Image 1 (cartoon, rainbow, N blue to C red):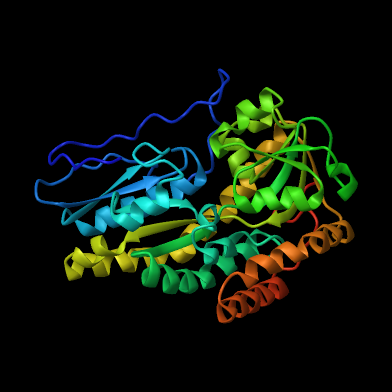
Image 2: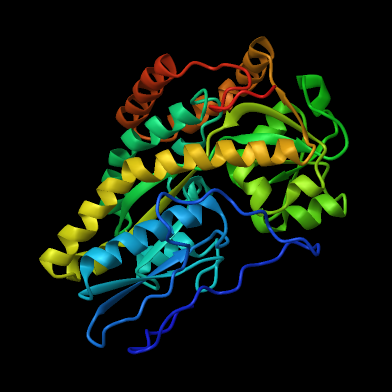
Amino acid sequence: MACGEEETTTTAAPATTQAPTTSQAPTTSQAPTTSQAASTTTKPEKAIVLRVAHTHPVNAPPCIAVAEFVDKFNAEAAGKCVLELHPNQSILSIPDSFDGVRTGAVEMAAFPIAIFGSIEPVLNLPEVPFMVNNIQGDAAYNKEMLAIYDEVLTAKYNMKPLFCFTVGGLEIWTATKPVKTLEDWKGMLTQTISPVTAKVVEYLGGAGVAVDFLEAYQAMQKRVVDATLQSPSAVTTLNLQEIVKYATTLYAVPASVGLFINLDALNKLPADVRDLLLKVSNEYVTRANDYLVDAVSKDLQTVIAAGVQVTPLDPQERQRWADKLKPYSEQLLNMVDKGIADRAREIAKRVNEQYPYVPGQYPYVVK
């Protein structure tokens, strides 16, 4: 899966996967520095090297955010330790990401958290349907939930989450007809990318089709599916605005990516390097979330400019959908320790009071 590091070479970003058209993925908004994902870093001969696997393509905002973290740490480490970013599943596939960090097959990895909810139920909590109202609330929720993930993963899975961040709620993107009511879901073939999204489609009355996240373009183009649940940034990263005609925004399913480190690898670091890694990680608890809020908003505007008809869901209709999914949402919460579930509910209650649902607000306003 991953070999030992070469000692004196430079690491360049692997080529990203192209969508099946001649067009390139649109350029996403830039991170708060000039650094790019998977920037080239020259390793001093005796530097400690930690590989950072990432599930997302190099041009995707979740990868850009982690790339900035990597560059900042490398600059401050000044040669004592070097993080190497390997995007687009180049050294670790999505299904192997969690176990790869747990076993130390790779030292660090960034991946969508809820993909592994079947392994550890606490990891479903970032994607409980209708848990939060919008991306601002999702960012606030992520910051506070980090402590819960840390408690569980360090105790049970030999890994520590360094930071986690929203990647935008999963909205509905369709190629055949708009989905504006529960009734519109009937017979809608919909890509599902996780156990949670599969259940969401089932409860709302659609027909789920399991398709890998990166294969959305082909699936939509060949009409394997009529619809998909994706964030706006995923849409622009995968060029789905070339195919989809309609979108409904409602923040039905929150979504988050986390950066994780193998606990043994962390504990083996010299104390000053370990302290620096944790210090920079703590900065990105806020910084990565702020960046994604901005990036996702800009990416939706890119989708709108491409001609996709975007409709914010009416609050009353959104409540109908939330009521339909409430039994499943409660099921996810009841799968974890009651104390943890209560803490998650309390966090969500507070952030939802601060950030109420406003149709079209993301924080952009669709006109």
